[in-house]
Length: 270
Image (cartoon, rainbow, N blue to C red; front, side, top):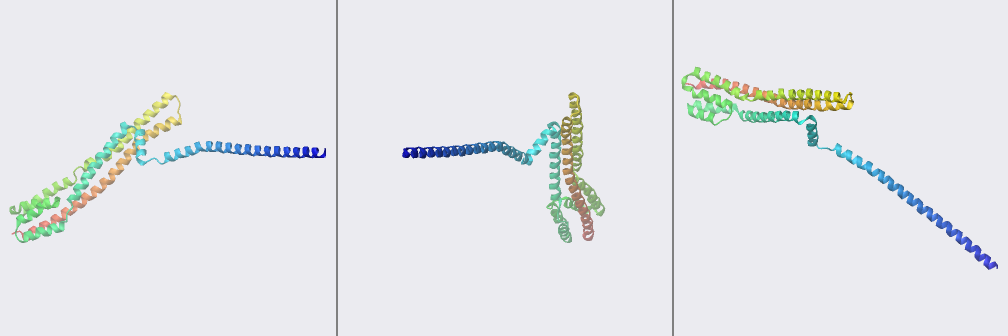
Protein backbone atom coordinates (compact mmCIF):
# COMPACT_ATOMS: atom_id res chain seq x y z
CA UNK A 1 0.00 0.00 0.00
CA UNK A 2 2.79 2.34 0.89
CA UNK A 3 4.52 1.52 -2.39
CA UNK A 4 1.32 2.32 -4.28
CA UNK A 5 0.96 5.68 -2.49
CA UNK A 6 4.62 6.44 -3.14
CA UNK A 7 4.21 5.58 -6.82
CA UNK A 8 1.14 7.75 -7.04
CA UNK A 9 2.96 10.60 -5.31
CA UNK A 10 5.97 10.30 -7.60
CA UNK A 11 3.72 10.10 -10.65
CA UNK A 12 1.82 13.20 -9.51
CA UNK A 13 5.03 15.13 -8.90
CA UNK A 14 6.47 14.16 -12.26
CA UNK A 15 3.23 14.97 -14.02
CA UNK A 16 3.00 18.38 -12.35
CA UNK A 17 6.65 19.11 -13.08
CA UNK A 18 6.39 18.10 -16.71
CA UNK A 19 3.29 20.22 -17.12
CA UNK A 20 5.10 23.19 -15.62
CA UNK A 21 8.04 22.63 -17.96
CA UNK A 22 5.75 22.33 -20.95
CA UNK A 23 3.88 25.46 -19.88
CA UNK A 24 7.17 27.30 -19.46
CA UNK A 25 8.30 26.14 -22.89
CA UNK A 26 5.00 27.25 -24.38
CA UNK A 27 5.40 30.65 -22.78
CA UNK A 28 8.96 30.91 -24.09
CA UNK A 29 7.88 29.93 -27.59
CA UNK A 30 4.97 32.33 -27.44
CA UNK A 31 7.24 35.14 -26.28
CA UNK A 32 9.73 34.33 -29.02
CA UNK A 33 7.02 34.30 -31.66
CA UNK A 34 5.62 37.57 -30.31
CA UNK A 35 9.07 39.13 -30.38
CA UNK A 36 9.70 37.89 -33.92
CA UNK A 37 6.32 39.18 -35.02
CA UNK A 38 7.05 42.55 -33.45
CA UNK A 39 10.44 42.62 -35.13
CA UNK A 40 8.89 41.79 -38.47
CA UNK A 41 6.31 44.56 -37.93
CA UNK A 42 9.09 46.98 -37.06
CA UNK A 43 11.00 45.91 -40.16
CA UNK A 44 7.88 46.32 -42.24
CA UNK A 45 7.34 49.77 -40.78
CA UNK A 46 11.01 50.65 -41.20
CA UNK A 47 11.06 49.51 -44.83
CA UNK A 48 8.77 52.28 -46.11
CA UNK A 49 10.72 54.84 -44.09
CA UNK A 50 13.95 53.57 -45.61
CA UNK A 51 12.34 53.63 -49.01
CA UNK A 52 11.22 57.21 -48.42
CA UNK A 53 14.75 58.16 -47.36
CA UNK A 54 16.16 56.49 -50.48
CA UNK A 55 13.63 58.34 -52.61
CA UNK A 56 14.60 61.61 -50.94
CA UNK A 57 18.25 60.85 -51.62
CA UNK A 58 17.43 60.16 -55.25
CA UNK A 59 15.62 63.49 -55.48
CA UNK A 60 18.54 65.31 -53.90
CA UNK A 61 21.06 63.60 -56.17
CA UNK A 62 19.54 64.88 -59.43
CA UNK A 63 22.10 65.62 -62.07
CA UNK A 64 22.78 69.18 -63.18
CA UNK A 65 21.43 68.41 -66.65
CA UNK A 66 18.19 67.07 -65.17
CA UNK A 67 17.77 70.22 -63.08
CA UNK A 68 18.26 72.36 -66.19
CA UNK A 69 15.67 70.31 -68.06
CA UNK A 70 13.17 70.66 -65.22
CA UNK A 71 13.66 74.43 -65.05
CA UNK A 72 13.40 74.69 -68.82
CA UNK A 73 10.05 72.90 -68.73
CA UNK A 74 8.81 74.94 -65.77
CA UNK A 75 9.72 78.21 -67.47
CA UNK A 76 7.78 77.27 -70.58
CA UNK A 77 9.29 76.18 -73.89
CA UNK A 78 7.71 79.15 -75.65
CA UNK A 79 9.84 81.62 -73.68
CA UNK A 80 12.87 79.54 -72.75
CA UNK A 81 13.61 78.43 -76.33
CA UNK A 82 14.24 81.97 -77.70
CA UNK A 83 16.53 82.72 -74.75
CA UNK A 84 18.42 79.48 -75.38
CA UNK A 85 18.77 80.37 -79.08
CA UNK A 86 20.11 83.80 -78.11
CA UNK A 87 22.71 82.11 -75.90
CA UNK A 88 23.76 79.75 -78.72
CA UNK A 89 23.98 82.60 -81.24
CA UNK A 90 25.93 84.80 -78.84
CA UNK A 91 28.42 82.04 -77.98
CA UNK A 92 28.91 81.26 -81.69
CA UNK A 93 29.75 84.91 -82.38
CA UNK A 94 32.04 85.02 -79.35
CA UNK A 95 33.95 81.91 -80.46
CA UNK A 96 34.33 83.34 -83.98
CA UNK A 97 35.70 86.61 -82.60
CA UNK A 98 38.09 84.87 -80.22
CA UNK A 99 39.53 82.76 -83.03
CA UNK A 100 39.83 85.77 -85.37
CA UNK A 101 41.49 87.99 -82.78
CA UNK A 102 43.94 85.31 -81.70
CA UNK A 103 44.92 84.73 -85.32
CA UNK A 104 45.36 88.50 -85.72
CA UNK A 105 47.96 88.60 -82.94
CA UNK A 106 51.53 88.56 -84.30
CA UNK A 107 55.01 89.45 -83.16
CA UNK A 108 55.21 93.01 -84.53
CA UNK A 109 58.82 93.50 -83.43
CA UNK A 110 59.97 90.52 -85.46
CA UNK A 111 57.90 91.68 -88.44
CA UNK A 112 59.40 95.17 -88.31
CA UNK A 113 62.93 93.77 -88.12
CA UNK A 114 62.35 91.58 -91.18
CA UNK A 115 60.90 94.50 -93.14
CA UNK A 116 63.77 96.73 -92.08
CA UNK A 117 66.31 94.15 -93.27
CA UNK A 118 64.57 93.94 -96.65
CA UNK A 119 64.37 97.75 -97.03
CA UNK A 120 67.98 98.09 -95.98
CA UNK A 121 68.86 95.95 -99.00
CA UNK A 122 66.47 97.96 -101.16
CA UNK A 123 64.38 94.88 -101.89
CA UNK A 124 60.76 96.13 -101.81
CA UNK A 125 59.38 92.90 -103.26
CA UNK A 126 60.99 90.91 -100.46
CA UNK A 127 59.38 93.23 -97.90
CA UNK A 128 56.00 92.76 -99.60
CA UNK A 129 56.45 89.02 -99.56
CA UNK A 130 57.17 89.12 -95.85
CA UNK A 131 53.90 91.01 -95.31
CA UNK A 132 51.94 88.61 -97.52
CA UNK A 133 53.23 85.60 -95.61
CA UNK A 134 52.39 87.12 -92.22
CA UNK A 135 48.83 86.92 -90.96
CA UNK A 136 47.05 89.70 -89.12
CA UNK A 137 45.94 93.29 -89.71
CA UNK A 138 49.36 94.80 -88.99
CA UNK A 139 51.00 92.99 -91.88
CA UNK A 140 48.09 93.92 -94.16
CA UNK A 141 48.50 97.62 -93.30
CA UNK A 142 52.25 97.42 -93.93
CA UNK A 143 51.65 95.77 -97.31
CA UNK A 144 49.31 98.56 -98.43
CA UNK A 145 52.00 101.08 -97.58
CA UNK A 146 54.72 99.15 -99.43
CA UNK A 147 52.42 98.76 -102.43
CA UNK A 148 52.56 102.55 -102.82
CA UNK A 149 56.22 102.86 -102.00
CA UNK A 150 57.05 104.50 -105.34
CA UNK A 151 54.21 107.05 -105.10
CA UNK A 152 55.77 109.07 -102.32
CA UNK A 153 55.51 109.33 -98.57
CA UNK A 154 52.22 111.21 -98.61
CA UNK A 155 50.43 108.47 -100.56
CA UNK A 156 51.97 105.78 -98.38
CA UNK A 157 50.79 107.56 -95.23
CA UNK A 158 47.25 107.95 -96.60
CA UNK A 159 47.13 104.27 -97.55
CA UNK A 160 48.38 103.18 -94.13
CA UNK A 161 45.86 105.39 -92.27
CA UNK A 162 42.92 104.39 -94.49
CA UNK A 163 43.63 100.68 -94.40
CA UNK A 164 44.32 100.88 -90.68
CA UNK A 165 40.73 102.10 -90.20
CA UNK A 166 39.46 99.23 -92.35
CA UNK A 167 41.36 96.68 -90.27
CA UNK A 168 40.10 98.22 -87.03
CA UNK A 169 36.52 97.89 -88.31
CA UNK A 170 37.20 94.25 -89.14
CA UNK A 171 38.45 93.65 -85.63
CA UNK A 172 35.19 95.06 -84.28
CA UNK A 173 33.04 93.04 -86.68
CA UNK A 174 30.10 91.14 -85.06
CA UNK A 175 30.64 92.94 -81.75
CA UNK A 176 27.38 94.83 -82.29
CA UNK A 177 25.53 91.52 -82.67
CA UNK A 178 27.01 90.24 -79.41
CA UNK A 179 25.79 93.44 -77.76
CA UNK A 180 22.38 92.82 -79.31
CA UNK A 181 22.26 89.33 -77.74
CA UNK A 182 23.25 90.79 -74.36
CA UNK A 183 20.38 93.29 -74.55
CA UNK A 184 17.73 90.92 -75.93
CA UNK A 185 18.24 87.98 -73.51
CA UNK A 186 17.07 89.77 -70.33
CA UNK A 187 14.36 91.60 -72.31
CA UNK A 188 12.87 88.27 -73.36
CA UNK A 189 13.14 87.10 -69.76
CA UNK A 190 11.27 90.15 -68.46
CA UNK A 191 8.62 89.75 -71.14
CA UNK A 192 8.12 86.11 -70.16
CA UNK A 193 7.83 87.16 -66.52
CA UNK A 194 5.17 89.78 -67.29
CA UNK A 195 3.16 87.29 -69.34
CA UNK A 196 3.54 84.69 -66.58
CA UNK A 197 2.30 87.14 -63.97
CA UNK A 198 -0.73 87.92 -66.12
CA UNK A 199 -1.46 84.21 -66.37
CA UNK A 200 -1.06 83.85 -62.59
CA UNK A 201 -3.64 86.59 -62.01
CA UNK A 202 -5.94 84.85 -64.48
CA UNK A 203 -5.62 81.66 -62.43
CA UNK A 204 -6.44 83.60 -59.25
CA UNK A 205 -9.48 85.09 -60.93
CA UNK A 206 -10.69 81.68 -62.07
CA UNK A 207 -10.13 80.18 -58.61
CA UNK A 208 -12.00 83.06 -56.98
CA UNK A 209 -9.54 83.11 -54.10
CA UNK A 210 -6.00 84.38 -53.50
CA UNK A 211 -4.40 81.08 -52.70
CA UNK A 212 -0.71 81.18 -51.69
CA UNK A 213 -0.13 78.04 -53.74
CA UNK A 214 -1.52 79.60 -56.90
CA UNK A 215 0.34 82.89 -56.38
CA UNK A 216 3.67 81.29 -55.46
CA UNK A 217 3.51 78.73 -58.26
CA UNK A 218 2.66 81.34 -60.90
CA UNK A 219 5.36 83.74 -59.73
CA UNK A 220 8.00 81.00 -59.60
CA UNK A 221 7.33 79.93 -63.16
CA UNK A 222 7.20 83.54 -64.33
CA UNK A 223 10.51 84.50 -62.69
CA UNK A 224 12.41 81.53 -64.16
CA UNK A 225 12.51 83.29 -67.55
CA UNK A 226 13.96 86.45 -65.99
CA UNK A 227 16.64 84.50 -64.14
CA UNK A 228 17.57 82.61 -67.30
CA UNK A 229 17.73 85.79 -69.37
CA UNK A 230 19.96 87.51 -66.82
CA UNK A 231 22.30 84.51 -66.64
CA UNK A 232 22.64 84.47 -70.44
CA UNK A 233 23.32 88.23 -70.47
CA UNK A 234 25.97 87.94 -67.74
CA UNK A 235 27.78 85.11 -69.56
CA UNK A 236 27.84 87.00 -72.85
CA UNK A 237 28.84 90.25 -71.11
CA UNK A 238 31.93 88.59 -69.64
CA UNK A 239 33.04 87.43 -73.08
CA UNK A 240 32.15 90.82 -74.58
CA UNK A 241 34.38 92.63 -72.07
CA UNK A 242 37.25 90.25 -72.86
CA UNK A 243 36.83 90.83 -76.60
CA UNK A 244 36.74 94.62 -76.18
CA UNK A 245 39.98 94.53 -74.20
CA UNK A 246 41.55 92.28 -76.83
CA UNK A 247 40.51 94.62 -79.65
CA UNK A 248 41.87 97.65 -77.78
CA UNK A 249 45.18 95.85 -77.27
CA UNK A 250 45.43 94.92 -80.95
CA UNK A 251 44.50 98.46 -82.03
CA UNK A 252 47.15 100.02 -79.80
CA UNK A 253 49.74 97.53 -81.02
CA UNK A 254 48.82 98.29 -84.64
CA UNK A 255 49.14 102.06 -84.09
CA UNK A 256 52.52 101.75 -82.36
CA UNK A 257 53.80 99.38 -85.04
CA UNK A 258 52.59 101.72 -87.80
CA UNK A 259 54.55 104.64 -86.32
CA UNK A 260 57.72 102.49 -86.17
CA UNK A 261 57.02 101.26 -89.71
CA UNK A 262 56.79 104.79 -91.11
CA UNK A 263 60.05 105.71 -89.36
CA UNK A 264 61.77 102.73 -91.02
CA UNK A 265 60.37 103.66 -94.44
CA UNK A 266 61.54 107.28 -94.09
CA UNK A 267 64.96 106.08 -92.98
CA UNK A 268 65.59 103.80 -95.99
CA UNK A 269 63.51 105.48 -98.72
CA UNK A 270 65.68 106.82 -101.52
